[in-house]
Length: 589
Image 1 (cartoon, one colour):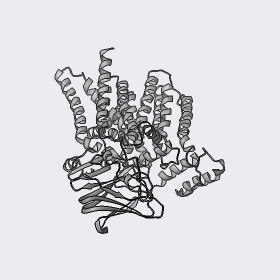
Image 2: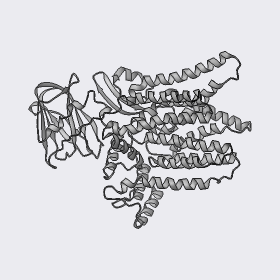
Image 3: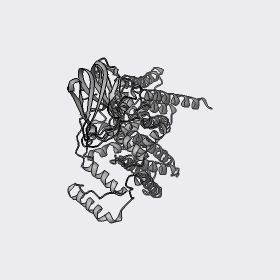
Image 4: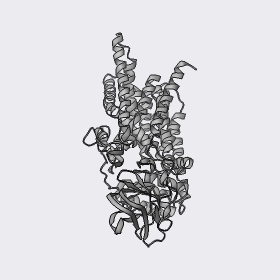
């Protein structure tokens, strides 16, 4: 094996290893409450009492909510002193496989009584009482029908309780639906296509219904992206050093890291987007060189189908590919529609893949057909009403077909008027004005917190990098020089994956910007590689200075990752340390 190949394999493998080490720490437990207690009869209040055997200083309770049914309870101390209450009414909140915290202040009590309301039907895996010195208080006696199930797995949970032991943020929707797909039950989350949930279900199938199981595939996908981006950068800039720069930056990119550890669809959107444009670039670069092979374009569009089956925003990638195809054909003086056979065939496979992801849905619950021709008048009324007044109030009768599900998805996203304190407008994302705070739990002076944001070196550094690329393309146009297709391939997808959000009126979050991460990295890599390879100056000192600048930027990227690691991973740190990372007043986590 050539030394160059050995260097590439060793360096990229080292980056993957480093990423996996950091991503695996505090990722998720394989132990989760497995025995559940549930109120005995609907419409009847249940009472459970924990007897501690002596007076204890109880600060708080943690309740593991095992399903999405309602859990409503009141908490009492000695002499029926009211301490607190809890209600996860599904009409207002969604909780699934999550630890819910009930703050009691600092109460001195010999026992705690839980009174579950008649409407309470939720399954509870465990209840843990925490003392004022942050230790578990084990009851010596538990009274109530089958209530020992509430305390039979205390040893499986290690303090402090963090996201390691349960679902958080939108995981509650995705994990619940993934499990329902495995059980061929009626899926809960239907506002996005099924593939993201099916991929999460694969992890659960392999590793069990636990936090590690539902997050592991995302971490693997994120790790695989590192060598893919290496190959992408190497191919794009014809330099293995440039490929290493790109892979290094992705290894220490915040959004890529945090989404890998969050069981939602975003990491798979990022993964498929990278593959889409990797194969697209392979096709366009061959076309620029006069080759006529279309397999890479075919694969690229099929990958858009997979991405589309996770979220419809993959349509932006298809638009970008078609526009790049148009530009490439004009540049190479080919007929504009010369690739229509490849595109049409790939779109047919695209459609087949999308429909295939609904097979578990069709076999679940009541059983769902693909389409109901008898509902065509209703569909036409639905579409005409939306076009006329922007209203989608028509609901097809059950059971819903797969086509009905598409109308439901469109209606949900077209008319959603929800608000969120950490939503952010599209134009603010590159500036990182409002990161998305997705998890927090604190005790004494320590806090476990998770935020979705980008690495400042990469996100802020990409702004001048992209502006300079655009300026270079404009300059080449003015000089009537042939534009560098590599620069077009960086800038056009970046803009077309981002700017369509101008037209979207629903609330948006910074994670919607995640698919642009590879293009931000490639833009920075372009300039780093130019600095590294710049031998236009004969002075050795100038070359050394350039390379010191490149290495310094890479080191800065890694240092920032280490600095922010606790708030990217939920690793407990002091409150003061967490606050020291809030560089802008709008950075709240």
